[in-house]
Amino acid sequence: MRFKCAQDEFKSNFCYYGCMARLFTGFQPSGVLHIGNYFGALKPTVELCREHDGIVCVVDYHALTTVRDPKELQKNILNTTRDYMAAGLDPAKTIIFQQSKVQEHTELAWILECLVTVKFLELGHAYKDKVAKGLEANTGLFNYPMLMAADILLYDTDVVPVGEDQRQHLEYAREAAAKFNNAYGETFKEPKELIQKEIAIIPGTDGKKMSKSYGNTIPLFGSRDEITKAVLSIVTNSSEGKPEVLHAIHKNFRAESELEAPYNAGNNFKQLKEMLIEDIEALVAPMRELRDAITDDEVRRILKKGSDTAREYASKKMADVRVKIGVAI
Picture 1 (cartoon, rainbow, N blue to C red):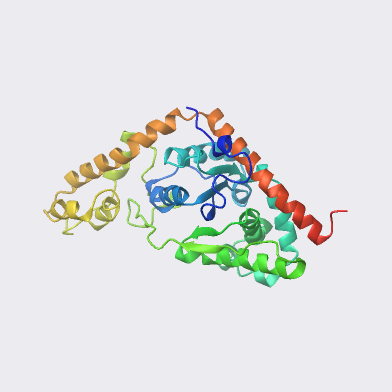
Picture 2 (tube, one colour):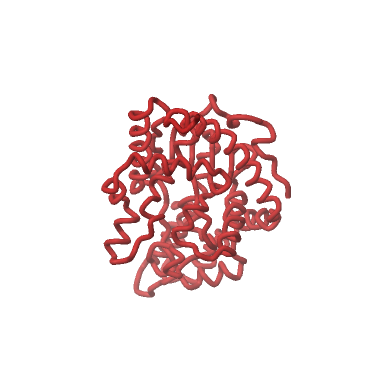
């Protein structure tokens, strides 16, 4: 299947620049996605990119803080991009590109690192959490906030979607922009956060937050048999009137008003699980069919076109930065 790219129609700058606020977001190329990822990340990203001048970055260099297998990373870059496209991210209206193909990201990250202090970076949540657990944190995780800031600042971003617990990401980007602007003159926009208050947190089959690390997921693009197996494993208790975990998952697929009667009808867990399986299939089957039609070569083409366009903009920005810091001679 061949998708039209935004770059096919808009040769320079980005497709809607000047018409809508520019939104930047990124996703790490991870493994098999689950329905928690869909409601927590894929669906909101797709919806926001329809309303903004969207730029979506596959942040593969960020993934290096945890991924050590090159073949796994290559596969994840292709598959996760394919997942987002199947979920509705439209390359005809949104720039989708690969971080590592635009070297200006790491160049700007180094420059920003030279402007902030160690104490400032020590406040990073991911770094602090790892140290608090007595684990050794690599330097990439420590410097992670400045690469993230570079990702955002290179494209004159207006807004970045974040959850309530992710405000620090934008605080780092704004602080880095302010420090550069104060040192070298007005150069970077200070982006605003677009707080996503309604992001769903989906419980897993065991009642904990759905997460690959807990082994409690329902695969987003799994086969019907795989989805059925996962749904049938959802914890229920014959002593509870309404199966709370099952209901908490199901309400993301069907209106509460439609669930009230079946969930208050008594101990009918098997029928409720069968209803959930059908509702998941109704959502997933069309996306799964589209996903299966997107080839690796098509994903590579989309990422190359997006990366070429991103690099065109980023290179202009970095040319200005190099002049201002004094390395352009």
